[in-house]
Length: 311
Image 1: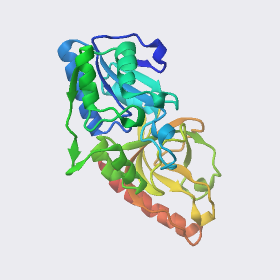
Image 2 (image 1 turned 30 degrees about the vertical axis):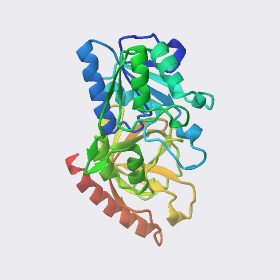
Image 3 (image 1 turned 180 degrees about the vertical axis):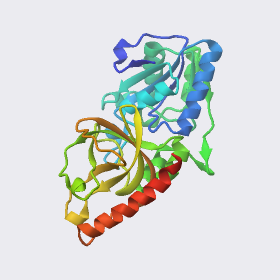
Image 4 (image 1 turned 135 degrees about the vertical axis):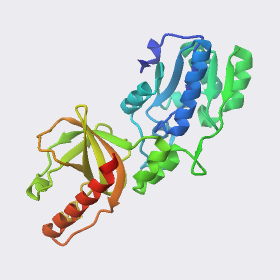
């Protein structure tokens, strides 16, 4: 997959089939658009192209409405997923305050058409873009008639009788309902981070944990609680359980993400882990002493093993 993170380096492809958007999460709705994009590209012998943005536009034009907004996929994660989905070209456009002032027509004509290049564009359901979100499928059609490119608008993708959206997935993760997210993503929600040194308290209790430091603070972390998870390290997958929270039993206040990997005793400081969330086991809670916490951890492990038995 060709990846351009500087638009100045893009080699124009006048015959490309293109789509554009944040594509945060790359959920099943996004994948539907990408499948159509690839199908149309194959049909005309052109390059499938996605134009996306960094950072997510809401960090620039959110107006402070949601200071807790976080993304489902970082750019690095997005690149890996898109490559696995068979996309041929990705163009990442820096989304700045200056860029946010670009009109919809200028964006289409000067950037998408003249700079990046395309002959056909695939537009997702209810797509809005440009300054004040003034652009829509009608804008594309009007300019398509002028510049001679085709426009295909797709219907919304629905699951469980509800529309699949990044907003809905964020809501579910904020509620800790990771098991409900898989049916919308087509995969487990995951985080990638580096293992950093902690206090070592888990090892004292017989449950050593790897403290995870995310590479991007803008990544959404699911609600506090204990989860059954799958952990990938150096090409091998393990089972485990993850705690997200402030460890109230020990009167701590800093939120951490720590994972206990089953049947694992290696030192892995500085290594990168990928943690996939399978199911939430329980909410975070305070225990009356370490012994009661350990007793609960043993029960958590039993439940996690049962949940992960088919993974």
